[in-house]
Amino acid sequence: MAKFNIGDTITFRYNKREARDKNPTLLVVSPLFKNHVHGVNLNYLNDAEREYISKDINSSDKITSEIFYEQHVKPRLRSNAYRTYTPRLMSNIKVIK
Image (cartoon, rainbow, N blue to C red; front, side, top):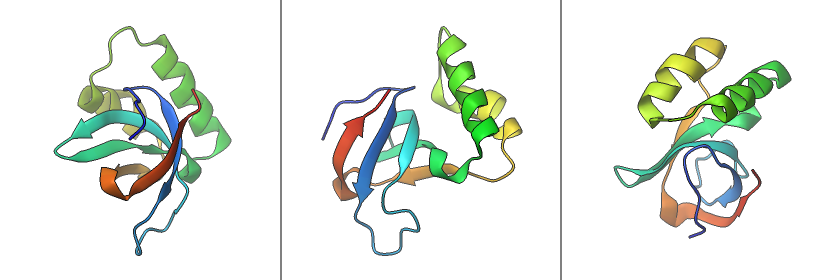
């Protein structure tokens, strides 16, 4: 699996039959917590929401995944874009930011 960290934006192919988005663009909230990758699927956000999250995460000195999501991301979103992914079902991972 490709190496990525909290705050990275990644794209990948998700090989789960029931997945609605087979090619997520994910802002990583936690690279591996309880055997899952946690993050915000940017494909579910509008431009203003994506811009806010990008600015906020880039201005944060210290990010703890749960606190960051609960305090900075969740209150600004109209929809729940928080997702978890099983690493063994992720392929073709690319860090884009």
